[in-house]
Length: 370
Image (tube, rainbow, N blue to C red; front, side, top):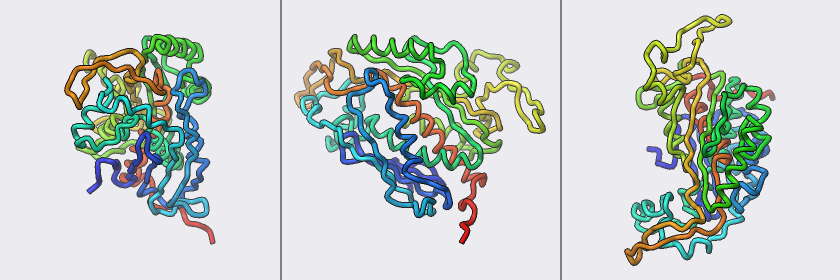
């Protein structure tokens, strides 16, 4: 039986590590043999996590040099579990000494203390910290390279931060060209500047902002998914909700579908260049828990960073007295930009698992020449 720290059945991913522990890592079990893979393949994805503009990110900037410990030999995956990790070198555990008994509003501190009887690592949120998202990206880098063998591509980007929103959907070439050219990961450069300004205003006020990340998966063949309980959208939603700070997920028209008529929401079928397609994509590429061959479109709501400088009410758990807390240390005024490559990776992990389960990706990728 797989534990709660593992997701996937054929491409099974287990995460380990805490915010202020020795390291954070991922073990991928079930990756087909014969996939070309190097540390640089993973490193280039990890490097996308931290925006270049230091003013809008946490002062804790880890180098995050990935190490592959197993599962790769002479540049190819072997079919054995792939263990990857990065070391935590910039942690300052003493930042949390004074608030050990003061659960931070908006964090899992109190619930974790109750569940684990006080044995949980409270420093920086421990297991519940955004720091663990580097493990998503390591596993996601492997998944994305595997998906590329089928021509499947996963692209995520920021569409809203606070009240600043893109006013139209970007073209695919804009996403490719512009997303990682600015600190907020927005394909619209004009909107990106306004987003950065909004983040800095919130930071100067001792506050934070949330936002929306959209993700699209291209060239996913029809028929991918395992209904009922392993439906493709169900598994994607599950992994996305494990990303810290995610509070909402919708596919296609999402909640807007509730206000549409059937004649408006249905996607009429057509023949396009010899294949079945739909005129619209309100379903977001998934029907009945199965991909239908159209782009899979997802929107993810990210809450504002809960660690803010403003004074907030809390409780001293040792004394059972009401108290106040003013959080110090190093925190992002907005975690949306960092979430973009994480969302991308999470979706890629689930797609890789389901494509192997459905027989679209073989267990061995070709045969090595002697």
